[in-house]
Length: 466
Image (tube, rainbow, N blue to C red; front, side):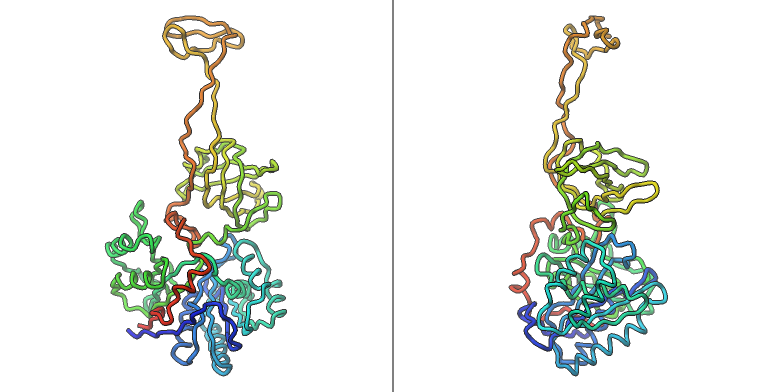
């Protein structure tokens, strides 16, 4: 095994060097194969082996709005930031363009885009563009206008929609919460074959490293979560809180298959970044994501398939349908909500169809306040304490046990029903997590903008070629 150690700048966002180069890549894969992170692995390997470039940051793996209907498998874009002389930059750019032309899945639906930005600082407009790409829909036209305004070089294949994610990737500084992922890649001869991982080793390292790695194994369903199932080049990916913990966990697997290599990414996975936007119900757009505080206005009902449907309203009384789907594992819990409950939900907005209106697809819900449920019941019998039966409108009540009768004027009882749900946070089961879903244990583990600079290694084992 050969390890290439890349020098990483002590200040991850120090762009003062005029020879900085920011590379953004997106949409090089399709549902039939390829992988954008694998292309980033190839690019990083080329840079490390053939140039003396310094890496300003770890390669960034940025997941964008997961509700986009034309998204790639995981809607991931990649950013690589380096510092190098102009001659090497040109060599790197030429390599990337040539490699994309021959190693992307254009013929099976990929629409690659790559961008190159060389200025000292990222424009605020680019940073804002990136934030919007996490939760909204952005047109290719708007992406091209932005690129040309700020002299960002771009290269596209297919319909070129990948330019959107490429720009979003380089505009994402990850200066708030973030995680890491160590991704191991297969050799071409193994693409499409079954990935074999030691079941017990996954459980062992998962328990040993908790809570500093996550979504390794679904203990409730006895299912390994680190391996994909398609024909793409990824063998497995381990996610966690530091580069060290994810690489050491990967090494502990003792993988028998001969791999091509692995690379560590810094990422917005597991951060709920796509849900930071506050949704305004009257303006809610299809395919957008975000969160809102609201009140349950129609009691949930479980429909065929086990899905829970209800409605919410904002502070102005504007109502909107919402759904918690059965695969999330929390649909039955959502069915325990009641009219008047105050909740916060994180959701995506499904577009309307000929049969259904737009609806909030709930990804998590936080119960803030529980409404009091009062039920009117018939009075208790004075003789035997059994609940009496009504004999009809204005006909009074009768006890079926002792036959005592009471006039209809007797007051019914107000019963305060106990609630079967508690105030608190409810998120999907691990097997239903999206890449961006924040696991329950990460609440309270979020990183601040200063954490990365404090802990950034000058040199680290983040790229391996086997």
